[in-house]
Amino acid sequence: MKYWEIIADNLKKAGWSLGYVSAIDSRGRTIWIADAHRDNEKRFVVHADEKLTAFLELEAA
Image (cartoon, rainbow, N blue to C red; front, side):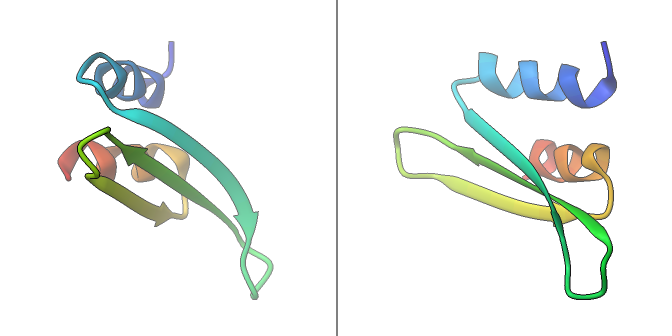
């Protein structure tokens, strides 16, 4: 299991719904966008150059 998957599992166990996607920015670089939200209307969206970095930012939020 990869570290970002462990973070995702921990967030899900804490009641967060998650989503993530990779995209190409205007300079042709791959970026990762991760989203976490709960029923209480709290929502966090982060973007980073690496998937792990995006999930580390969600974990810290």
